[in-house]
Image (cartoon, rainbow, N blue to C red; front, top):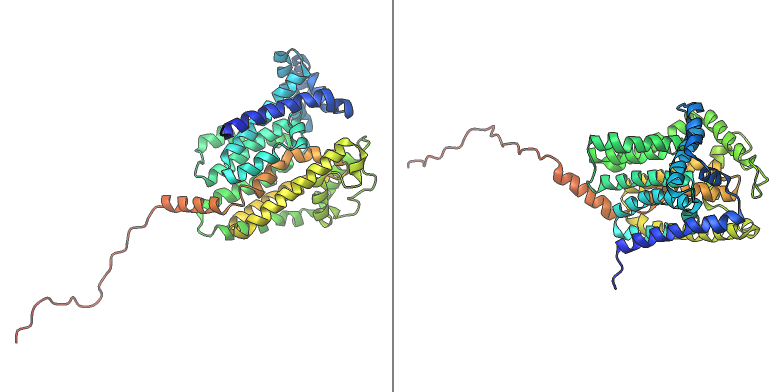
Length: 391
């Protein structure tokens, strides 16, 4: 019997549904997830009252708006499921699965095989298979990541698609995770503009360098904002909170960024892995995840065109840098937040680091580029005579 990708997609959906059940009957007995249980208890009347009292503002602190939207989705699912927490979980899992499926189907088979394994890792599956904001965010990122890949395959859509699909997706994502904006703008901007130049590597290098300039120009407010968000998570109640502050001095956001990004992406340290079953599983999972990504990048990077390498690595930098202060205070929180943005890490390190994708993209652009008509030759000297001289 031949195993097909469609069979895998069915298996993946059922696997994620299993985690929706497992989280409700097992994980919630080991650790409390108050926001998920709160969303599961939402009803239409409560959401309507909250919507009337809610004040809406376009700022980088719109968690109340995101929470209201998540609560509204949970209330609708509760209405149709009879209030079953497991069925509400499966509903949110299905929302995330839509984005995952779109992303997987857009990627070339060689990268898809690796993604097929990584997307079944326990922590990612758990946090995106329950009633959570993560499930919604993963759906949105999957749609955006799919469209980035479509750009390189020449499957880019018209203006209507941008206005009625991508723009609403970006608006909802901005409501949930405004700090994702830097990575989204960079990968979309460089991918789109790269099609209009014959030197895409130079464009990507200039764009990458230019994207770092605001970090210096706005270093004081960015450092203050990042440290405030970090301290906010550090002060939250939790048995796994780290006691020693990592970001303590001015400009630590930038000076400690390399170590902080790794710590926030990895989650529990070796010492913290002994604190409980979930931390141990997360530590093993993170070790395998890092090993797979490192091996894949080391194998592909030497043959990757400069343009694709800059595009992929800067996308990863911007998404991890923007998120790392939130994942420093608590190893469990780090793993949960990683589930939010890890699709963009996979996008940058797996499909984008592809020489074949780049060659196919450039060949397609050259084939559709209008040809200039040949310039006729002009004689500047006297026209030679064809007469035969008479002796």
